[in-house]
Structures are given as C-alpha cells and as structure tokens.
Image (cartoon, rainbow, N blue to C red; front, top):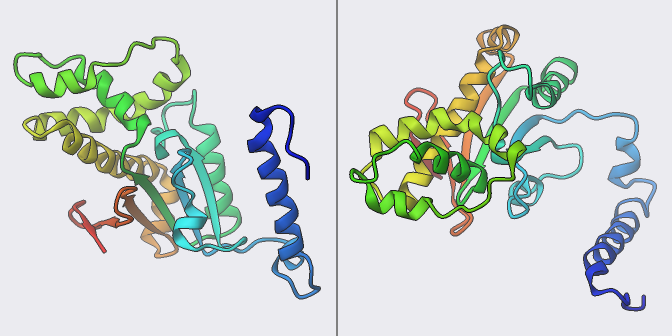
Length: 235
C-alpha cells in the first residue's frame, strides 16, 4: 500500500490494515473463533474501564473476542443511580451484561495517571486553603482550560472520592494523592453500582461478584481491592 499523501491519515491507514490482518487471521479457517461468535456472546466477565488509549483491557488481560464485555468511559466512573443526566449509557451496558447475558463478574478497573480523576481532584483542590497544602495546590492548579464542560460534568462524579482523600491524606505528595483518588473513585463506583436494588439482589444471591482493580501503567502491576476493607494490594 502506498504511503498516504496526507501524513495525518497514517493512523487511519494503520487501523484499516489492522482490520484486514484481523480478518485474515480470525476468519481464514472454518473453525476460526469469530464466525462462531456471530451467533451470540457468552462472556464470563464484564469490565467498566477507562477510555484512556493506554489501558486496553483486552490487551492487558489477554482476553479474546467473546471473553470480556467492556464499557469504556472517562475515569471508569459509574454515576449514582439518582442522577438521570448521564447514567443511562453506563447503566444500560450494565443491565445488558448482568440481566440479559447473566455475567457473574463485574469489575471496575481504574489506572494510574488518570486524567479524568485528576480533573476531579483539581476541582476538589480549588476549595482547599493554599496555606495548608501549598505543594499539592501548586501541582494541580495548572489547568488553563475552561471549555471542557462535558468532561467537567462527568468527572464531577469522582469529586466525592477526591474530597475524602484530601481530608484523609492531605499531607501526601501530588502523585500519591492522585493514586489514592484513583483507587477511592473505584470504590465509589462500586458503591454506586450497589445502590441499584436489582444489582444488590444479584450480589446477595451469589449470582454476581463485584471487583475493584487498579492498573499501574508505569510498572504493569495490578492492584486489587480487598472486599472487606477496600484496601488495594498488588498481585
């Protein structure tokens, strides 16, 4: 294939070549995986993950097509059920996975250096007295954009977690504070899921298990939340 005249098209050309390679690899044999999946899906796990391009769940967890039902949204957030403005997209996917497909495991998976959570943390820190935490405030008060209205509305769902972390760990460095906020927001998303009565019933009956995971981009380590304490430990 000739190189495109417009170098800005290089990314599109790569994706189209990837589609051709995928078709050749996964459809070239009558016994290939994909033709069999055309009749339906039976994934064994569902994941709410971040939209960040660096954290593709299928690549990180070695999932093949049909293995994992994935919802990707900024900062892997699940809004509270009483908020009707933005929850329908995430919740409709959760209903598909749990009610329609009967998936027994639902994972909320966050990651390090999450811009969505840091946006919420930045907003939360606007209410902090600069004299009490000058280093943290200086580190986060560096955003000069006020045009990402939808992004700020969405990431506001992480502010409750950010305020809790600031109150508990205000002495930490900006990087450590962000990690705590990323992990705490995962726990908040799990709380928001459990606020749905039908999901509570599935969990209580043993038909559903909820999980909180956090992936460290720099090291590749996966941290898992203890169901009893909410503390994250690497595996």
